[in-house]
Length: 332
Image (cartoon, rainbow, N blue to C red):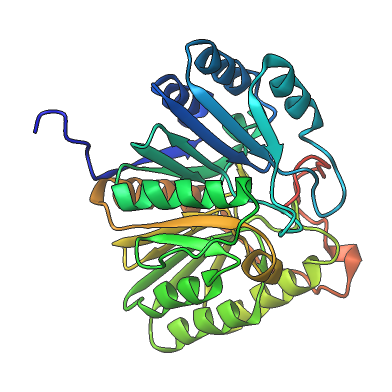
């Protein structure tokens, strides 16, 4: 049929594609928009939501009320949306933090992203988003939104290619790492989970060539730096090649297996991301998505320098070569 929806995926890369890529998705809405966000501070996105509302689209927005450190970044956006007459709610109290970054356009497209809707993430950070048109994926993101909106329990089907926390995201991440036969490329900022650490080391022990792009200390909280530095040091001892990304701030969460399969999404490699928070990721074997992810990772790898994590117990070494601290850039 001529009007049949595509079932393939598209990749958004930040900062290459910028705010315009998200605005274009919002502009495509004819009837419904569902947005669930950790941080909404982009004037361009806010204005696009208002235009959608004004043309009769049912817009519903869920915003995370506060970070784990107590910062209330979304109060201004909440008040502005409410003032415009747009339906807005805080995310479900079942989770201490909702870190999910999703957008559903009508019932035809779902964006699952690593980036927040804030100008910093459109211009300064490496981030990814996958837009899926597959009906099972779109309908499940909608179901997750409706469950959280209505404060109901959500039972996702883990077989459609979505990765949910706090359901079984650790197991799903471990599963794709276990699939690696030749190469494993990892682009993640923090490492605070022993299960995933062991899986990465096991891949290296069976001969998989592992490349890891991290962000060093930048954006890592004081309580996560011990595990992250220790994990990086242990992986290096087993032959994992580690570089620190600095030409862009690293906020992406990406695992590439054998150059053919990818997982990306909101969850860090972090116990709380797996077990406590609402998070959402997506898997892809779409050639156009994977090829662009590979090319982007390779470019970032080529621009990065070899990194040896300092002793976590020696704070005098922690700032060496780091980007200036940014209180508004924290891996929550």
